[in-house]
Image (cartoon, rainbow, N blue to C red; front, top):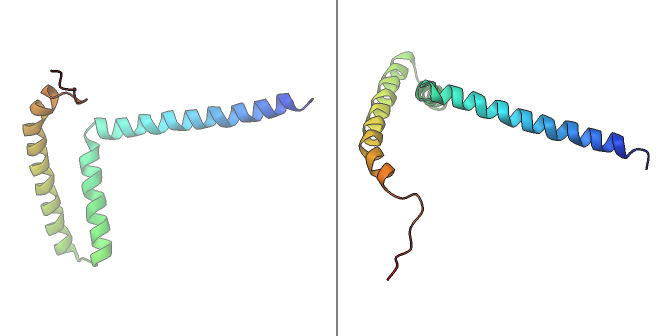
Length: 98
């Protein structure tokens, strides 16, 4: 029974560590994606991944980078077009009342 303080303390350390790690992770993700770095990071990831998988040379890599950039611009245009519709629609379906 004397060890209960040590056990509670150890559990508290692990729980606080998990909470702190989660908060730091959320902060980093918000910072990266909130400041517009997310699109560039994703483009770099896609180019690196496909370069590795397809064994692309530098010319092909630059062509791929242009394709990824154009695709991202197209997606931004679609998001801008859809955003007003999403803001006016209800996030939870409302039941139809008679």
